[in-house]
Image 1 (cartoon, rainbow, N blue to C red):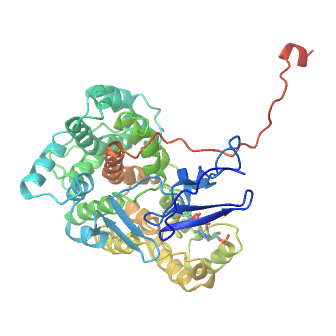
Image 2: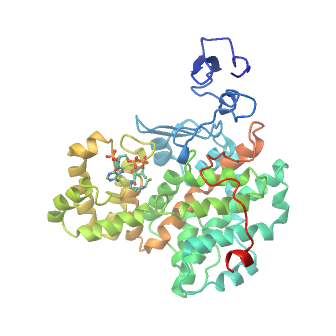
Image 3: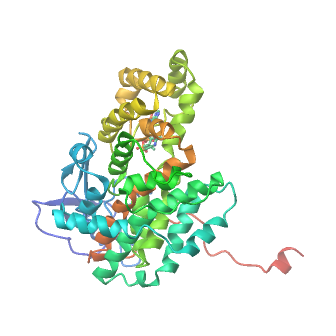
Length: 439
Ligand SMILES: CC(C)(COP(=O)(O)OP(=O)(O)OC[C@H]1O[C@@H](n2cnc3c(N)ncnc32)[C@H](O)[C@@H]1OP(=O)(O)O)[C@@H](O)C(=O)NCCC(=O)NCCS
């Protein structure tokens, strides 16, 4: 039996654990609704055996950090950045102000906002060598692969970014990254089309400039319909942060090694590339196209209920209620279609949502539309090819990744991310040299 002492004797805010292997009892402190995994590690059978650990693939019930950036209540469908409800930010703010809020933790004064906007605007250009190496990608390179590589490559252009302990230096890299992400994203798009890269136009707003770099041809000045600019800006706001999702976890995990922020964000772009994360809206469009017409919806739903496939754009690890972002996007879709004309797939999506929300299978499992259910339809209305959808997500998510990275590098409790494992392989096998085994 272990002689480890009880972890705490205060039982009011604690969890009493009786280890039936040894008969010992422990009172583990509860703080903020969590216990420390390290406290469990003190529970052991004897000095030789490892302490008790938690097995949690996918971190479904493990808090990896304390964070003051984003609050989500998945049961109630609440999302707040720095305490401000997403609905209010989407209605009354703009993406650059939201980026400021996420990074700095508070809304800017007029002077602070003007300085921030100026800084971001004047860092939109990239080194000419970035252009050369982006030209080196194959003609059919996926724009997410190009974005991931070019964000990572920025670390070679700004080696000073490794100095992550200096606040002014951190600020510089944050400004550079938020500013350059649309340039890299737009150029990844133009490359696939064999069109010349368009340089940033610093007279335009953040989102309008992005549209200009994407779509400008020979006209002197690119002009976009204000409603489209606003809709894209709102989409960026809605994607700006989502607490500890897979890509943010990747940014934090890589950032925990104290590498420069470009390398950490490149890891986030990689994580976002996966179909279970950023790629779901593309899957929604494929699904809607396959369904083809409303009459086919019931048989499709039957297939989903029989476990043949999933209703893409439905369900969420955290939201067990209507994703608040999906509501706002549904409204944005209407605004965009006013300009571009409607997408016939919208009717199928609306009908699919209606049927699913009334069906016992989805109701019981608390499956509601998520952010991806309608976003693909909007992106398609902009004439973005599906490969670009995740690039748009990445541009929107950049301030969130950086706010989380900033928090991480200043958090004294953080350590290099290094989970445990439960080893299931062989042990102590005798090795015979290949020359003997193959003789
Ligand atoms: C997002 C997602 C990965 C979350 O998964 P999760 O939290 O691990 O939930 P689970 O996979 O454990 O699903 C719980 C139950 O709901 C079902 N379910 C979850 N999402 C479903 C969907 N989109 N369609 C049909 N059934 C679904 C599962 O089959 C499971 O049912 P069961 O209890 O009978 O086995 C999942 O909902 C999904 O794959 N959705 C579609 C992809 C998508 O839209 N992703 C974008 C997320 S923003």
